[in-house]
Length: 255
Image (tube, rainbow, N blue to C red; front, side):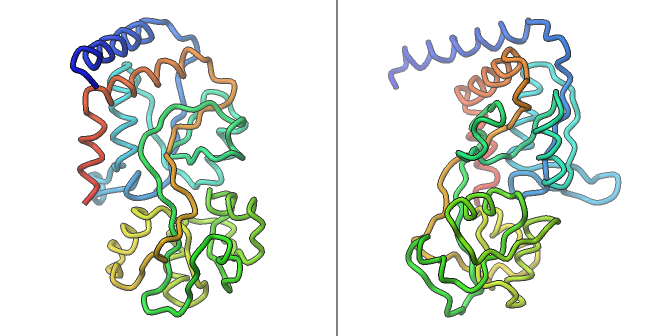
């Protein structure tokens, strides 16, 4: 992009941000919800020093700082958070995959970061397939209820899903290594981070050449959220991207 147009874009986005920040948004206090899904959002430290961090946490906090929002971010089980953002006003949930099934159920701000969903298998496993369609012949695919992977595979007609009714999706790592499931579909960085944390990174590998989804993660707002709030958050995110702040955040975790 030529320097002139890039500068014009930054100025335009900045103007939008200032405009929306100056708007008095009645009832704009938000319940910001997330789940542990490293490296996008996870706890770091122990005791009083324990805090939420990660790619999406840093981006959302940067947006909040830009618009002067001090609402707290609360981590909770995914199923509970998803139910709340569907049914309760002034709620928002991240990091949320923007799937066709979810498109009309929320209002969206993003994208925050990229998302590549792959199939992990235990290293040395003889489980193999060369396409998503062939994965329908796998014995057991480990997923978690209402997580994007379960929704996507169910919509594709998969009948071989072994569904956990609750809990963090990373529990499927243990099930995979113990042979209770044959593959675990999840975000590539989430899977590798979970394995590193457990000291078992060398025990899993992605099935080569097969991606379930290549897309992005967003903030999902309750569908009745005031459009001015959505515009305010989106303008702030766009400004941060134009300034290069988002790329710097992502680079810290992309290693």
